[in-house]
Amino acid sequence: PNERAAVLRFLQRKSGTPEYLEVAKKLGVLDQTEQLVKLITAVPFNTLGVEAAKVLVDEHKLPAIQTAIEQADELASASAVSALGYVNEPAAHGFLLAIIQDAARNRQLRSSAATALGHSEAGQQTLLAMVQAGQVTEEIQFAVTDALLSSINESIKNAAAELLKPPATAT
Image 1 (cartoon, rainbow, N blue to C red):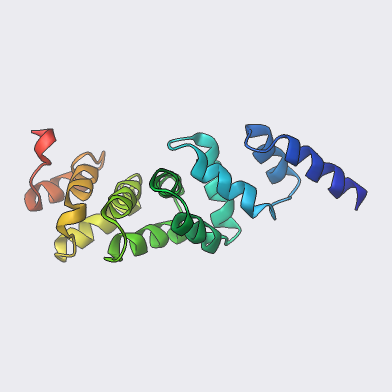
Image 2 (image 1 turned 120 degrees about the horizontal axis):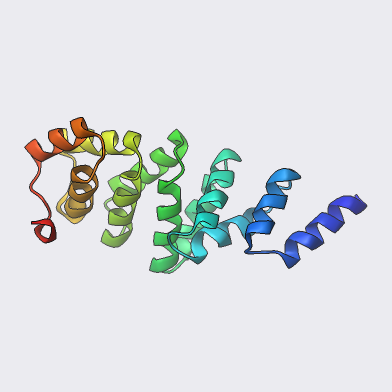
């Protein structure tokens, strides 16, 4: 009990730093969901945010991320979605896909989710399957096209090239 209190005090002082996440993971103090969510919404394209997202996904805390996305401003929501795109786990991919397919969500968040899903080959394959099934709406067309045509996997890129036009800024 005293050791946990000391660790929690240390984590409180180190909140938002790489040391925070490193110590929390090493000592198994992963019940700090609120702090981890703050890390993924704080700064877009941040390695620390990606690591925090991985911990949250591994600890089955996607509902906390969902709540944060719903309550945050657009930049913080996009930051969280972007971080999830680098977590190569089926749960993260499913979460992003649900955002993409939710027509009630705003265009920017859906596009951010499509871009994030395109960060992995598995995500690109999911996006390609959506294109092949005619499930890509105009709102996310640019993000999906960009993600697929910039794939390092030649078969994904070639299949996408047959089905999609390059984004206007890419020509």
